[in-house]
Length: 88
Image (tube, rainbow, N blue to C red; front, side):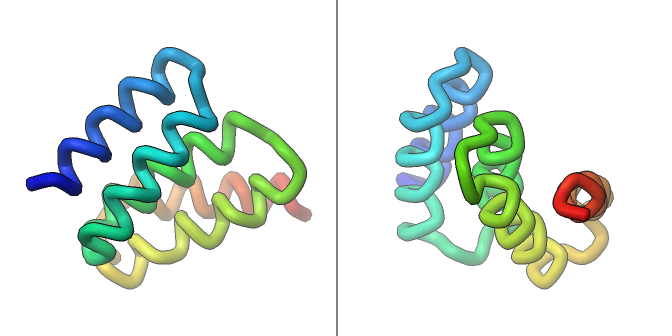
């Protein structure tokens, strides 16, 4: 669907290092379908590497949502723990 389109484009932008564009695209995917934990995970990954003020806190929020939607997703838990460690 349209959510996957924006998610995939956002992932491509993250890989290319265009973090602001990636966040915008992935946020559109979340707005379309807020029930896919992978969308939040992907946006959290962008926020984790972008490192603007407040990004780690936002990444922690994004890594928390998939634990509610898909608690078996180990990648989310690992990233959530990493951010919690960085935040102290």
